[in-house]
Image (tube, rainbow, N blue to C red; front, side):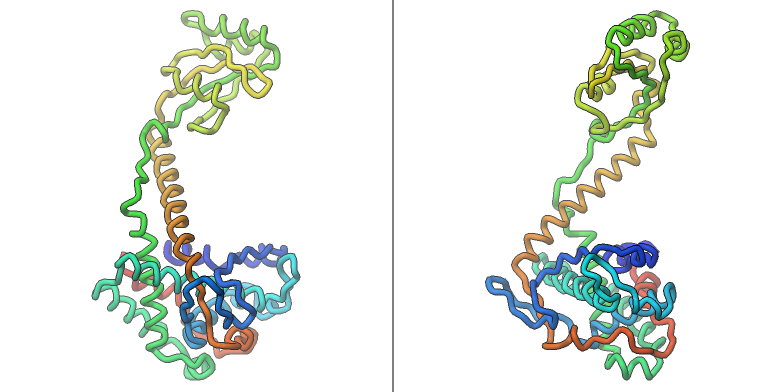
Length: 331
């Protein structure tokens, strides 16, 4: 369900957070009026999705929220402006559809496309989704299986783009950058007290904990990565071999003495390395996407968003776009 979770980051928000008054952070790309028909001067205008295609996503979101919150969710106000929930959700869906369109344009620009196998998998997902819709929902949405296929193929391509766009960007993380160590430390505001402790703890066969107790100081154990502390603290800490005691470190109006208890935590270093890599990949992707998206304006049929009604009742069904995508997508 990892794919579904990633999608959730685009649109879906926990009901409890919404009910607490979630602030809107839409980042819309077009600067359009409410109906989405305005063309932005200085940008290349691209036609957005049809109403039927938008409804594929909109009905999945409607279904999810009503399952958690019942239809009472439509009476909730959210954000600083106090938008009703339908207005909020339509803005979120609009933002998602804009991003989906732009990511597909970027994929085309970079020569990234679905393989025949990937396209066939998306077509099977579309058939599954469409087959779960009752006729009344098909009629209300105005959707055909071809509409569903288009959205699945575009979503699949967007996912593929997210994985491949940064392939040629230097993202390597060295062991030194990711290195994680363990230290024990004492902290005091008295420099002379720190000096005396450092001399005692540095003696051969001295026990760091016992020296601290004798001096009335508290020992705390730390797990450190680069950037977690001040430059002076970090430089001294990462220079220590296992078992070594540091010089007195003056940082942030306090004095520290450290003892290194593990100068290379292999498991934590590997985990930190992965986190740093993913953060770099995300930043690199966002920079490429932002540069491209700033040249594009996505517009929709006049009145599409104003006429979109999410509060109307639909016959119950289990056609969840993203759950079905997760079942059929080629891993």
